[in-house]
Image 1 (cartoon, rainbow, N blue to C red):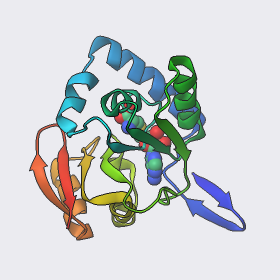
Image 2 (tube, helix red, strand yellow):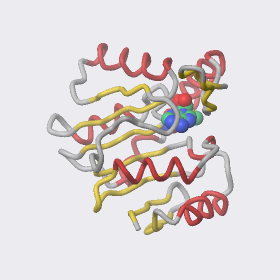
Image 3 (spheres, rainbow, N blue to C red):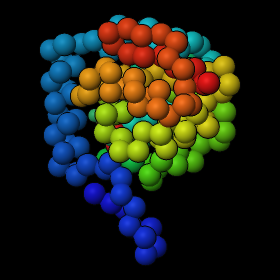
Image 4 (cartoon, protein in one colour):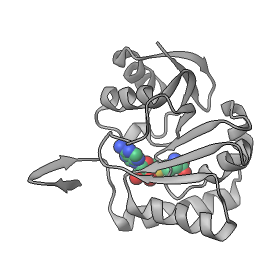
Length: 187
Ligand SMILES: C[S@@+](CC[C@H](N)C(=O)[O-])C[C@H]1O[C@@H](n2cnc3c(N)ncnc32)[C@H](O)[C@@H]1O
């Protein structure tokens, strides 16, 4: 898939609308039969008042949990390259009158967020899709505070592939590793 920007065609990881809808439906089934997100996010180190970026937010199942955790003094940026993701998050914001979530539709690896904005950046179930991991990790580094944390997981790739992509970037140190996720700090 690609997005038109002027005459240039920029390759991105954007899935088709049909695939996005199918994925959203599947998430609903998984979350109904195997509710795991509440328990999982408790280990991410997110606290009241923090600024969190949910990078590759999809339909926002993590975004709303992060919003609860940071509270009214915190902020969650819900970033995605897919219009349907931003639409879904906006719908949820309206339905639940959520005031601390800002959906951000982006192109490529430019999140358009300010430098050093995030205490925690979460890239959940999406790093395996990224075609240019070093470019991607550089953008995550740019938006993370110097003492901030990146929480990233494997998604559909083996752990050693995730780790070698992070290591090869030369940008992040892995400071914690669980079966579920990796925590990284800026090198
Ligand atoms: C498998 S879904 C996971 C969604 C969500 N993180 C979750 O776990 O429920 C992957 C999401 O990452 C988004 N994505 C893929 N490449 C991206 C990129 N370069 N920048 C931002 N989002 C991206 C996709 O559009 C999709 O919504």
